[in-house]
Length: 305
Image (cartoon, rainbow, N blue to C red; front, side, top):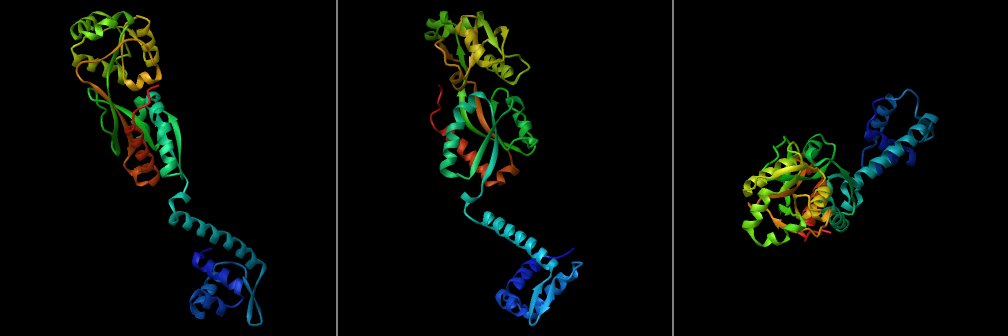
């Protein structure tokens, strides 16, 4: 059956008004044009649609069946057109956001709050993703946009069709055992201590582990890594207990506040929180709104605890 949408809309008007002439006047067509459309529609179906009733047309059972379905299709088309051309608030969209620990705690609440003000039609679905595989998850369209990491001493290789925007930069901090509290005031003694003591770092085959070692090298420290720990909270707890020195950042320490002494790692190494998204996804108003909300979230003073 090869009817057209215009034929169905004309058919509905004919059925409602009862004559081809009245339908033509209502639609702004000629009576001949309406008659031709109805002849084409009739030719596309196997059963008669109309029965003559004097000068008027009446619907057969087949015609009434088609009218019911045509009305549904026409209403669906009207609602779709209204949703696409109406105000933004009428278009609800769900955007999946890849998140990881410290960035999620800092950004998601203010970002969602911002969206409620600027784009109440946009809903966010947070999805926890391993930060090391976040760019691939974006490239494979498993998530729409993500909070990711980039370390200046160990930059991520670019991926085709994926772009990133820096949201926040923060320094590396040395988290020291309590016994090293006085050393924080003397850079020379602190450096000597850092080169002699035990360290707690992630394995070298992890992204953060490599970044830590590059940052230490830039600072002039050769860490004596005795403990391989991936979980930042555990590393900080071990440093606090006197086991050794570890590295963290201000946002990381928001997940595990500590009274242990800290000092900025020499060398000015930093890590960046970035928004990662496919270029094509930025054509969606909803994804751009989420990205802008994340930018706004990180423009505010971060909540560290």
